[in-house]
Length: 447
Image 1 (cartoon, one colour):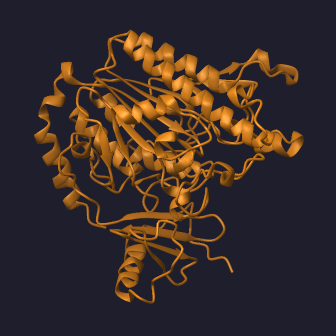
Image 2: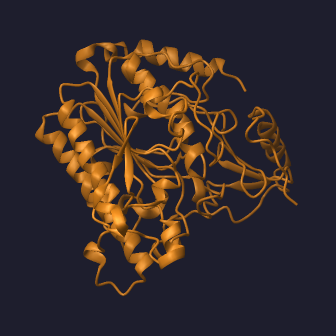
Image 3: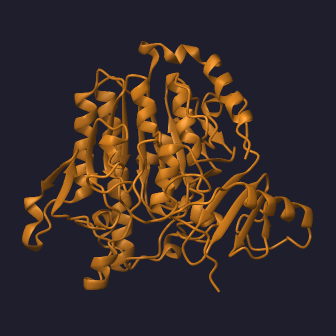
């Protein structure tokens, strides 16, 4: 791993955009994250059956990325990568275990705090249990409302949520009642946070849980896509799983529209950077079949796969004061978000991160590119993935490299490792060099 070129890019970026460090010029920033939403789930990415007019408008008015990747193919490591600017070969949380972030882990929220921002998290965290070093209030967030635990976040009608370090009981969900839908509570909290901090600058991480499945309710009652109603899809000749999934996305899109309306109402629209993405590819859980909506678009695989269907995700960035509408095909990933925000607010990021700032791409300038993007996954054995220019390499359990040319084979159908042995060998070296060992996620080879 070589970090010195990254340092040069980031420092150069800070010099080039020194005007951003002026307090009056600092934008508000809202990062909205969906949970298990596939690349092909939005109209602006080719979805045909589920309407997403507000997100489509966000894309039309901003920059839509075609080659943007999540930090991992499951939740916790993906969010760790997003928060800390490191890929899964280096970040602290590399799997869905209850391992908290440490005091020395520098998060996106701490970057914003250094620049004088008020910081808030509404929704799902997954990087620290109660009373650990990983809770949001010990990782740079002034305000937190939502779920700490990932499994708890499966339940859309929980009996409690957390507000900062206080457990908040939801009386409407006691005794098997379902009157307080967590997604609706998150939208209300997000709107309130924006209103209270309208004098800014603020950073809001709005981590919705839709359209993740409630696996436990699916097992018990067959209703894994848990939603108050099916909205405009109630009369469709679909299964309850498909209707529930569509209704979740409808609800999310509607409420993102409400967030955007609040920004306009408060006069914050022009100088607020709004980003939207998903933590990994689509699931096949809770009675939902991703093939029905073609949720992974042109890609192969879903959540828990390292083919692009499991890790390539929507990414939209809208900032009317700075971003011209358009499309970017630069390969980028979650670990690039922290240095990008650091460049915007004039703070130097940690020296040991893997990300590079994509502020140049946002501003329509020449964008430095990664030599490669790297992932590792510790479920069902040990898997690694590398994007290297037009090539994608995958290795399972330290076996032979599968090699695909994704410029002509988006679905990663034809293994060309025998045809390009030098490329396969280079990717194999990257896989060996791009990681450090982890005490919590040792390499385990399954037979």
